[in-house]
Length: 87
Image (tube, rainbow, N blue to C red; front, side):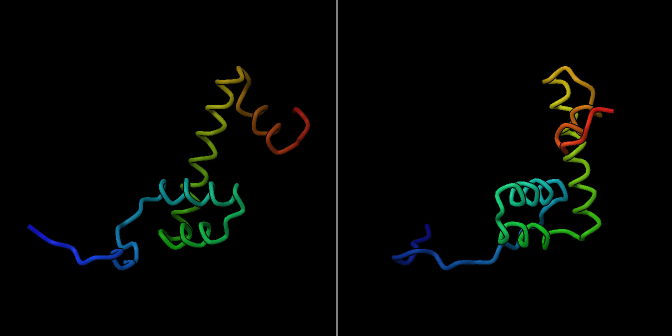
């Protein structure tokens, strides 16, 4: 059995691997909350190309989910979210 020293455990850098979807979710959430530290952290987890792919996939899934929820087309939802006139 291990006994830990009294007091808080020392801070260790996050060394686990992050996948592109975890990075994208964290990155987009941080952008929405204007959290520069979170943005920088998530951007360092994967390559810029992988992050771009993950953000694109998240955007597609979010638009599809909102379109289903609103019973509208994905194009209409995307244009509305961006403040564009209906096509």
